[in-house]
Image (cartoon, rainbow, N blue to C red):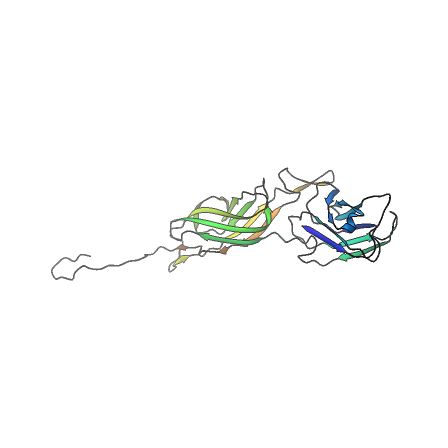
Length: 298
C-alpha cells in the first residue's frame, strides 16, 4: 500500500514521526529502512530513508545532520510518500498519529500531534477481509450417465503466492461421481490443489466426473440444481517466533504470517448444475397403411 502524507504547520518542524502503522507483514527485522519520496522542503532537512519499526508501527524521518539541525520553516508544506506491504489478514484501520517536534534538542517535549481514528477503506492500513470478488461455476452436460466437466472461475482479493500450494475445497457436487482432478476428503467434500504464482488473483479450476444415471424421485424431471460451496486455504505461511522476532515458518513464504483463508462461499451458477431424470427425448408409434387383411407393419 502506498501512503501519501501532507501537512502544514504554523510552527517549524525539527522532527517528525508517525505512529499506529501496524498491520503489515514486513517483520524481517526490528527496524527497517524505508525509502520515502519527498518534496523539496522535506529533502532539505530529512534523508530519503525513514526508520520504520513494523511491530510497534512507528515511522521516524531521519535527519540529514544531527549536529546542525535546520528545521522546516513554519507554513511550509510537508509532503512525502512511502510504500509498505499489507498483511494477508483483514483489519480495520488502526488509530494513527502524526507528531512533529517544533523546537530543537533531543530532550525537549514541544510536540504537536494530529490523530486519525476513523476506519474507512481509504484509511491507512485498512485491509479488506480475504474473499472471492468473483466466483462462477458451469457444467458441460446434464445427460444421465454422461461425462460432465465442471469449470470454476474465481477472482480473489489476496494473491496466491509462488512456491506455495493453496487448496480449494468444494462441497455439494452431488450427483457427480467418479470425479478426477480433485481429491475426495469425505462427507461430500473435495480438495483441489491450486498452482499458485506470484500476485495471481485470477484463476480457473476444472474437474471431470460422471453424472448419475438416476438420482430422481418419482415425478421429477430434473435432479438438482445443486449449488457447490467453495473455499480456499493456504496455511503454509503460518509464522513462528524465534529470538523474539517474527519469522516465516519456511523459506517459500512471501512474508511472515501470510495465511490465506477465504471462507466458504456459494458459487454463482453460470449454467444449470443439474442432471436430467431418465426419460424419452422423443417417442412415436405409427402404421404404414391401414389395408384390410394385411399384416400391419409398425
